[in-house]
Image (tube, rainbow, N blue to C red; front, side, top):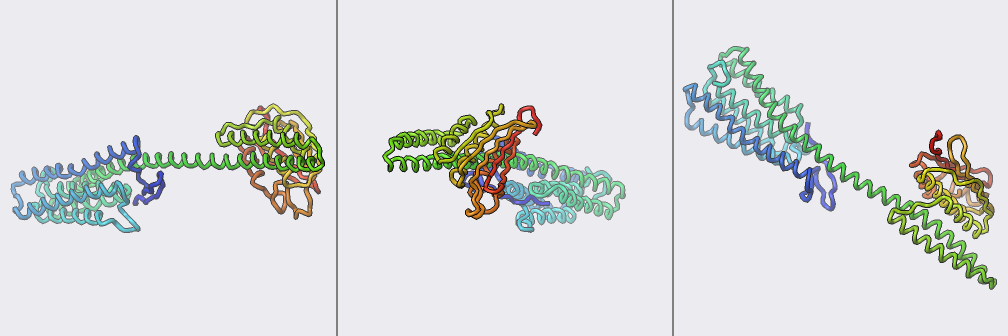
Length: 431
């Protein structure tokens, strides 16, 4: 099992599943601690070789100077390669595109060399106890150091299988040397446990580090998602606010122009209303950007009357504002705003009814107009061609708002009448 390489973005720098150098605090602290701990594990291999030297001195048959020197050089080279493997394992996967990295191959090769030299140079094991068997000690320590280094990039399952190899070699060598099978199996099992313990300790440390890295990456992703969600909210709100404002300005500007051509003094009053509308819209846009704006349902109903009447559409509002929580009131206010904007911009309506009622534990807002015209090719009030079940940007935004407060939005068409029905559960009522 190998650790796969993942690519993430942090700021302007692309990394491969590793914390950026500028990160401060948890991740960098955990990584520094883990690095120091595992780097310290590598020299421990040389310390445990001293047990083999002690066993050799008690056996009374020291190896030749040349053989001992070759084994010493091989052991030091193996330790250096283990250190390099641990270092690479912290920053890169040890298996890339299905192939071992060169440092992994070199480390395994060095372990094989140390094992072969131990079998050739060191004397045959004669005591039953492993403490006096330099061959078995050397093989076990070398295997533990090798698997510990590989544990920075390999999973525990392949390491467990690999730990069986030095255990089997130890058992076979002792049995061939004439030692009892039971003691050979015991020594082999001890070799297996030592190698697996060393590898498991390193693997656990790397797992903790990987969990901390993933948590840090998840926090960064959550931050990016929050930014993206806020951008979508602002884009949706800007569509609603600016769309309604520009529609009202366009209608009132046309009306004032027509009055001015006739010399009617009411043109100036209409232009004053346009100015007031523009100022209010500017405040709302600033509120959208700042995240402070919360439309009021009663205010939106009053604004709907003004805009529809200015557009020459007869309007009737039936019912009282229901007692809802602020978030539901805000959602209904947006329905009124967006629905009236669509009536003015996308329909040929002559009349528009807005009705509020509370029945069966749910508050409903009906917005009905008679502006559907087959000559539009089936254009619905949301401005999208085709069947009235199609959703434009505004209608889709309203559905999102209502869904957030447990409500629903439905659109229906019957002849030339188009109905926008919003529904939310009342506090304490059933959905």
